[in-house]
Image 1 (tube, one colour):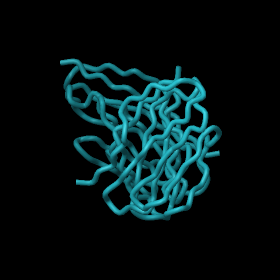
Image 2 (cartoon, chains in turn orange, purple):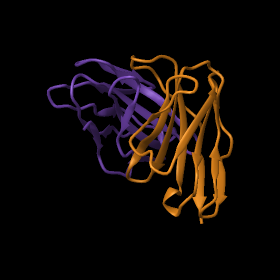
Image 3 (cartoon, chains in turn orange, blue):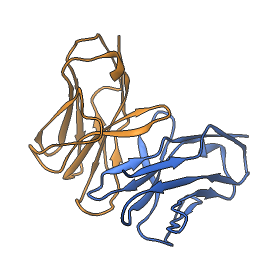
Length: 114
Length: 111
């Protein structure tokens, strides 16, 4: 079975803290993505990566950075968390570039910033 | 830019009712279209997809037809079950698998 694992289901952080969200996939997929999910807004793409050490900005990258040192792991970093970053964060992976393939999602990490 | 618009939720139906969730899109070129479903406490999973005009995607009794003339990809099911209660997302691919999602429609099925 394909699996995308996000390290924490629930996190509570304080304003100004540095936050790491980890995502690991066991499917040898090239592509990995970070989305945030907010009620009424659907999913919005934060960053994505097509290869190790490669990253591209999505639609809402401000306040976030990412790291992909190994093919299976894609980390989302909030350098200085703010209350407007309270959200559900979803990691996803997919096999091939340039085709309409299937995205496989993790269960999500719900972050609350106080 | 590319966008996806879904019907407002939440939608509440009785078991065995007919379901339609409307989805329209705005995009350049010929995007691929998807429906994803998110069951309570879980991540999203692909429900069905269509990659060209007039294609019909189907899975688990759900269907959607890619209508280029009306830029629509409405989700339908003839007889819903309580287990279909979930949030449904329409999405399009603008190449390289970067999906653009609609806002989601919460569906509740009562016994």
